[in-house]
Length: 158
View 1 (cartoon, one colour):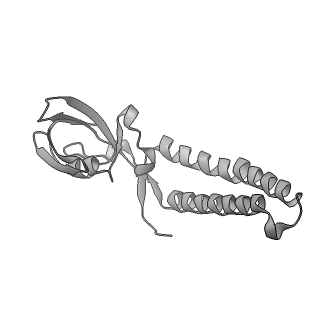
View 2 (cartoon, one colour):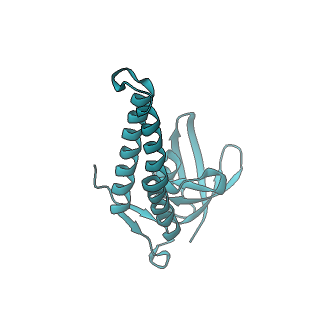
View 3 (cartoon, rainbow, N blue to C red):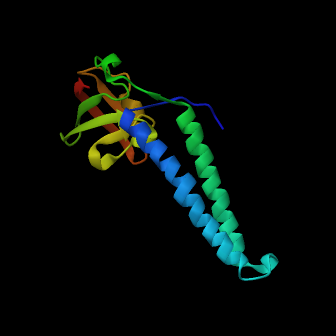
């Protein structure tokens, strides 16, 4: 697995650890039950249920390994150390779409913490990448799958 350092809020990292613990306990227990049930149905060489359960087990173990890698390389950001003179991870940025004049307020977060409904966008998303490093008053011309978006940075806070 890649050793890519990611930055999280304390709550975001706690959520990842909770998800990992759930997968290791409840997830593995569920797969174990599925395997046991499939084994009870006889010949394993022609048992599609057993094959499906083994596939599900492999997927679960891959997900666990990926989460363990993410957590091992996670760092908690101290909000007091964040420079809000420019857009960076964990800053809140108020922007105006220059085409339709609509304003948006986003918090830039790690990919696993992104939740557009609550105004959290990933620093790895096209908009997140396009806003990183910009200062108040700057314009950001961002290529997105549907075309090009033009934003003006109105404010940056923590």
